[in-house]
Structure formats: structure tokens, C-alpha cells
Length: 243
Image (cartoon, one colour):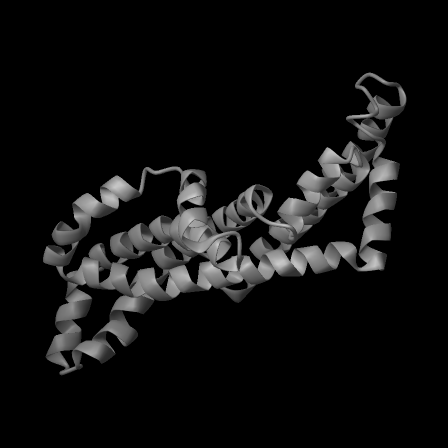
């Protein structure tokens, strides 16, 4: 526990040290200040946008879409991964489809999703659902497949029904792998909600960042990126605490 606190403190110190370096580079015009504004200006824009409610509103819109796609992927692909791990014939049946769909870059799905769902929330939710599917599915499958078979044989010996064996033995034993898949998908979720909003939306943090860049409000663009970094870090820490 102590080393974790020390590690976080060291990380905060490094982050704090970056601020004056950034400020100096911009003020000294080592990089064009139009594209690399001072950190003080970015932080000022960030706090003004937070106080006005604009930034929290955009973040909440994006998180709503991201959570819908992420939870839907978990609800569908954790059970499917468990079934594939327990019954090899199910994996063999789906293997070709999975191995062909998995390498498709998630941004390539955006145009297809726009054709079927338009520019509404359904498009963004589907893109996130598709993108989060594979880490969740394959990690769940690997976790279940690598369970010590003695646990399953023991559960059968004690007369556990199939449903109780899955919920009380299989899923708990595979939970480290399942949680790994969920954690990987958490980062993918944020990436894809931003991409989908940049391509086809009129709100959300992805659209906010792109719109600020188009209007040359570069400090607001960086403020939006800063908010994403904070949200991503917070979600990751909440994930660790819950696990």
C-alpha cells in the first residue's frame, strides 16, 4: 500500500514539473504559441468551461454513450466467452467469424454504423459495442478455458447444477482474466466515443475538441483534451478500487 502511495506522489510531482516546462516552451516561442498555448491559458480556459457547465455537459453526454456501448458489450460477450470456454464446439463454430471480425480497425466500422443508424446515439453506441467486444470476449474465453478442471469436476461431484457451477465456480475462477478484458475495453471505449463524435455528431467531448480546433480556439481544444485525460484516469482508478 505504501509503495502505491509513493508511486502516485511521484507521478503527481512529474506532472506538476511538466507545467512550468510547457509554459516556458510556449512563452519562449520555441513552438508556435498559436498551436502550443501557455499552460496557464489552457488551465484558465479549462476552469472557465467547467464553471460555465459547458465541459461537464459535453463529458456527461459522451460518458452516457460510452457506458451504454460498454455495458452492452459486457452483457453480451462475457456470457458468450463463458460458453465458448466451457464448450469447445461453440468456439470452433464461431472461430472463423471472430478471427475475421477482430482485426477490423474499430474506426473502419464508423461509416458502416452511420449507414445503418444515422448520426444518432445508436451509431456511437454500436461502434463502442463492436470495439469493446473482442477484449472482453477473448479474455473471458481464455480465463474459462484455463480454469483448473479439478474445480469443475469437484463442483459436479458435489451435485451443483450447471447454472450454479457457472456462477459459483467458473466465473469467479476466471474473473482475473475477465477483469483484464474489461479494463482494456475501458480505454477503447473512450477512444471510440471520441472518434465517433468527431466523425458524426453535433455534441459530446469529441465534437467539442474538433469544433474548438476548427474555430482556432486552441486553448479550449487542449482544455477538452485535459478533461478527457482526467476522466480516463478517474475511470481507471475507480476500476481498480471496485476490483
